[in-house]
Image 1 (cartoon, rainbow over the protein chains, first blue to last red):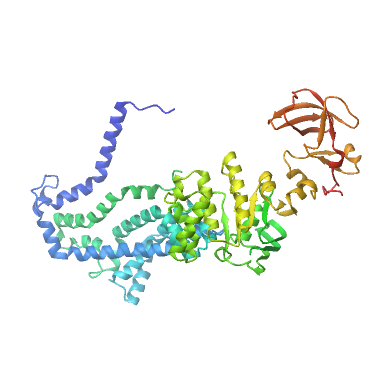
Image 2 (image 1 turned 180 degrees about the horizontal axis):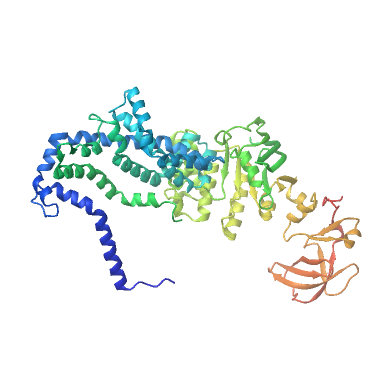
Length: 274
Length: 335
């Protein structure tokens, strides 16, 4: 039997945990505090407690229209996630319930595409986008983000579907359900927790995606990542405004993550412990 | 109508033939039991009929129509799974209604049929519950309700009682048999339990390594087994076999005597086999004696009522000469 830890040990671990958590959150905390400082104070004394001001936020909105970028981010992340699910649910179904000897290889191959540096395909992608007239277009970007996250979405759903007893799907077939009814009435409702956490994780990944959004957009389709980057300009760095822009960019996803952390943790650790 | 015909059905996984070649003719309304040891291919055969597995070759006909390549949804067969396979996200009502919903039946018809089925199966009080809030027996009843509500051509049961405790199993066995008598629909029932096979079936298919060893009524199989495998598999406790010189006396390679076809006494009789009692199992209505017979090995004897035999006692066994089964060297029965 494991020894029950003493109170001292418990206190020690709790302090250590809080300290590590503080270290992790510190950059975000600093960004948020800096965003409320006047610009001069932000550069002169980064460690000082601020003289609170909301000027940076007003200036950021008036200079670069936060809400337009926010809307682009929402369209790109939510759109790419729903498109990915539309493809991934049938794909994961076939891999989980009708596997062939090559299924594992296909899964590994899909994952291997995530290991390739994105910059390696930047030039061909850029040229394809230019030819198709999709540069600086939200829908083009939505498709790209869908494609780059598709392997992870399929993998996650595959892991969830593997946990569903095939007997239940077979029972549906015997009860007269053809393929799409089996998916709609039986598989999807049973996999709701898995699909929800996949959806959340993919929205977060797409929201944070910076490489493709910076390279394939200019102004019209630019999401929040491009909005932040625009504050690192040749005229110099504006710490306070950059912080305000960053805070505005991460706030929605931080809130989403906060309210759905149970689902997310379950999604990320699924299959690790039976 | 619900006749099922299998013509030279073969199923192989890679190079391994699970079912080398089976032909069977199941008539409308029959209660057929597929019985055999684990891995004999009985569940695979049922899944081939259901359409959940594809045949490698051969033809499966339902009511004379070739359905070999039809999807399970189009075969109009109902199946009850060993794991019940209820839809966990639906209520009992939703589970029973599901096949009707798939058949696009109107809501009021669904409602009436679900409630009728629930009444027959004593599930009326549980219609709003989810499967996880039901006992094993209730879940099994829901699975049966889901199967009967659609009035299929035939019911397929894949070891439906093996997850239930012994007492419940006996009850459900009776309920399924009664259901068959009421509905008169073809039923195919897979089990490894030969007691279930004997008590429920109109006809039994004994399977071994993917082959049909014998197809006949329970008493036909009991009285005239086609070979040593069937003789050993049907009957409980198992038949006793004797090889060698004793079998040669009967012009056979080996002989078999069922445990219930012996006379046992404490005094020697002409032609008796001498042995020592190992274990005496008292069941009240019967006593099973495990006797070490000199030169033949361990034999099981069934005697009626309470018998006072004890470990180490010497006894004499006389097999009933009219009930001795003879087998040739290929283990086939000799007439």
